[in-house]
Length: 83
Image (cartoon, rainbow, N blue to C red; front, side, top):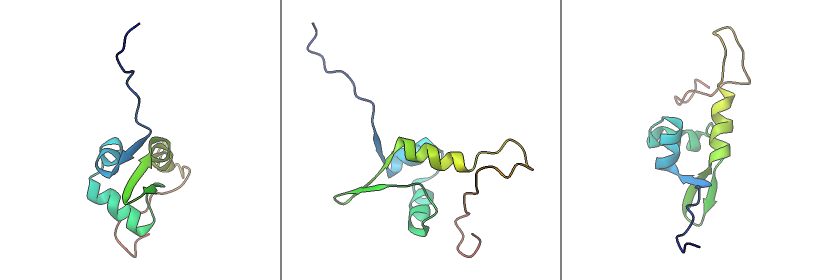
């Protein structure tokens, strides 16, 4: 038997890593969080973390198969007043 620790897959990502996961900038993700249009997040102490499943679920809202497909929903733009 080996005493080597088994790598653990991360369950939660901080904002910079979550932004990379979604191919967004961290600032864009922070603004979505402030406007209430972003993925669900957890606040652990003073840290904001995102569950990978929540990031994927939020991204799936914008999934479309064609330009005429209404899809499951719409991810709002960041500009206030244009939701």
